[in-house]
Image (cartoon, rainbow, N blue to C red; front, side, top):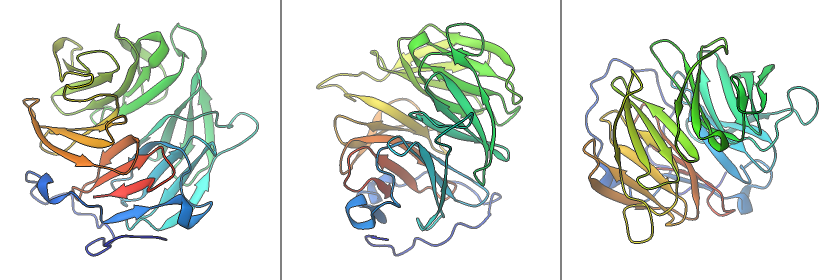
Length: 290
């Protein structure tokens, strides 16, 4: 595996009781690890669209849009295994995003969602094409409410977010927003990203819109945001596909830092050790860890 400056990239250990403080993003200008498909061959994600972390182990799960599968790396970015059906009920078709809910991993794809175990065993498929309950049109970002395991799914072309129970029953929805692409939850808020301007919408957990923030467009704060993450201090990290950067905003939505990346970042997450994991669509340096 090709790496750059792997010093300090040790296996993640369970340590959920430690005191969390603000992250010094100014120290994160160069990646600890940089994986390139030119150097690794078929192991690396060719066209990654989504990334998530198993907080219990630090394992990194990456959706590969090109190979229609999930590729799994350990906390040191060592390749472990991949999974995904190419035929039948569990077939992946242009997967977009993924999230871990208890011992399962939930994947959005064309007009539905897939339910797999964390070791790659297919469990079920939910949804069909349409605009009713449990019907989808190009679902994208996905998030889990840690308090009750509700599943929030950006139903992109239906301009809404569907909210399902952990056993995949329809509960409610948020709408209407043009092309919602990603959704994240904190204890206090629901954050929704879309391709309009402003691009971040902030709700409370009663689904009341509080504000819409962060300008989008050439010459503004972000150009083409595709994915985002919320860190332990409620800072917002946005993967800006067209500017080849990670734009970081504080909880008051003020720009505080910008991290350049290699090419076209499509998804981002932050792990329990404050490392930033970014996947990029272009075929150079497609997995970065800061």
